[in-house]
Every structure is written in structure tokens, then in C-alpha cells.
Amino acid sequence: MKAFKPSLVTSLLIMGIATTGAAQAADWTGYTYSSVSTTAAVKGMQRIIDRTEAETEDLSITLHLGKTLQIASSDITQAVGNGFIDFSADLFFSGNVPIARILNLPMLIQNDEEWDKAYAAMSPYLTQGFAEQDVTFLGAYRYPQQVIFTSFEIDSLDDLESHKIRVTSPEQGAFVEAFGGSPITLSGSEVPTALERGVIDGVLTASAGGAKNWHEFLDYNYRLPVNYAYSAIIANTNAYESLNEADRETFATIIKEEASNITEAFLLDEQAQKESQGDAGMTIVEASDAEIVKAQEALAPFWQEWASEAGPEHEQALQDVLTALGK
Image 1 (spheres, rainbow, N blue to C red):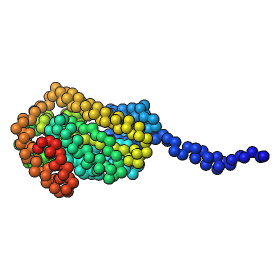
Image 2 (image 1 turned 60 degrees about the vertical axis):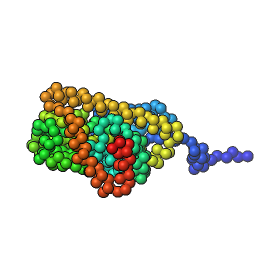
Image 3 (image 1 turned 90 degrees about the vertical axis):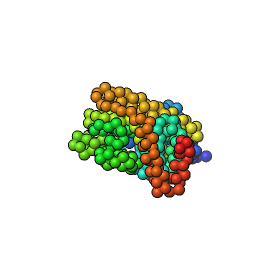
Image 4 (image 1 turned 90 degrees about the horizontal axis):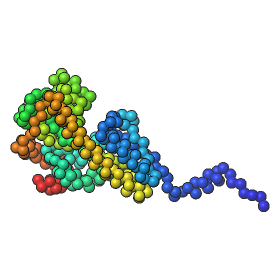
């Protein structure tokens, strides 16, 4: 009998059948909003990727720094949701998941312990908010508290009156307005020139944040904890759910651990930068408990107004956070 010789097409079909159902290696595209590889955030993202490749069976990720892909900072969550990228850190997600801004409300959260409680209360809302964008929320790291840096002498909230302060969100703007100041929105690259020319008189940032680059223009630091900024770590839901269960669990564990490490690295850098700025001649004033209470009382109505305008779900989320904080 003549031996059967499969055609090329038949051979390819057989190969396809043979590999159907087999585990397929996942090669993801990763992205971060930061364009500087030496920041604690980018170093942490690279650790996540290195550990993922070492500890999972089939997942590898190539990290792209901010501005190396055609993705606007405000569009990162969308880019993950539509599969243009698979994995990212996103600091600018609040436009896509507005409920997440509750954790940014001024004077709502005052310290690490309160942050942990508020974050736990908000986690279900964050998970749902990102899920609606076809994105899986895996965790978050946060920056140090945003405090007040100025070119004018400041040792109380009353000193903000009539001064122009650069802010990064409407919520920070509400804080500045509450004490008679004028909030100004500028990109980070515009800040040094604006300070030099008197377009703005100060900024809300952290010692390890903007003040790290702009300290030569900022003579005073009033350390009243206005609010926190935080970055979500997210993945495309289809890509994430395509991983085998063991890899999903390992990946989630790595992110939880490294997100905590990124936060800790920022806090250590905050203390180091604060000391360095003080040694260089910056006048640093710690806000009194009375000033903090004054600011909380002034901003508490804003929290409720903000949530009421946003809708019932936001009102419930805010109430859950306030209950967790005992406020």
C-alpha cells in the first residue's frame, strides 16, 4: 500500500490540533507614565516584571517608559482596556474612574494608618470602576503627602490669601480657594519658569516629588498634609484572565508586595529630601494640630458637596470611607 504523505496544509492543521489547549506563553506590553527610569515607581515596576518572569510559568512583560508609546497620560486606562497595552501603572486614571478621586479629597486622610483604612474601604469601588473599563485593578502605590511649598514666608493657612498656587487637581484647587488663594494648573515642565517669573507663588507637592526638582525656587515648606496622590497598577482583563490560575495568583502576590515596597521607597526618599532641602536653607514649618483641624473643618463640606454632585454611588463610597476613618 502506498504510504500516506500529508500535504503542507494537512500538516499545519495537524500541528494546530496538537497544540490546541496547550498553555501559551504570554508576552505582554507594559507601560508606565514616568519617563525617568531611576524613580522609585519605575524601579518598582521593573522589579515586578523581573520577579514575574522568574516566578511565573508563562508570563513575560516588556516595560515601556512614559512618552515612548503614543499614549497620552490621561488615556492609559483606556489603552489597557482596549488591549493596546496589557499592563501599566497609571497615575492619571481619575478621568476614567472618577470615584477613585475620593482618596484624593483634601484633608480627608491625614496619615499612613488612615490611608490604609480608607484604601481598604475604597478597594471594592476601585475594582468595579476599572472593571467597567475592561481593566483589572491589581493594586496601588502612593506618593508622600502633598504639602505646601512657597516662595513667600508661610507659617499658617492664612498666609495663602491672595497667593497663586500651582495645583494638580480640582480637589487641590478647592483647598487653595478655601483659604483665599488662587489655584493655577500648569504642567510640571512649566513650573520652574512660572516660579521664576512670579506667575505662581508656590506649589502643592512632596519633598520627594516636585520639590526635588524645583527647590531652588522655593524658600518655604509648610508641612500641612493636604492630600495624597496614588498610582493604580492595572492589567487588561482579557489578558489577565487568560493566564493560568497559578500565574494569576503569583502575579497578584508580586504586585501587592512590590506596591508596598514602592510606597516605602517614596517615604524614605521624602525624609531624605526634606532633610537635604532644610540643610540647603529652606525654611520648614510643621503645621500645628490646631491648623490641621482648622483645615479639616473648612474642607469637610466640600467632601459632601463633591460626592453629592457626582452621584449616589460616590456618596455611599465617601460614607464608607468616613465610617472607616471614624469621621
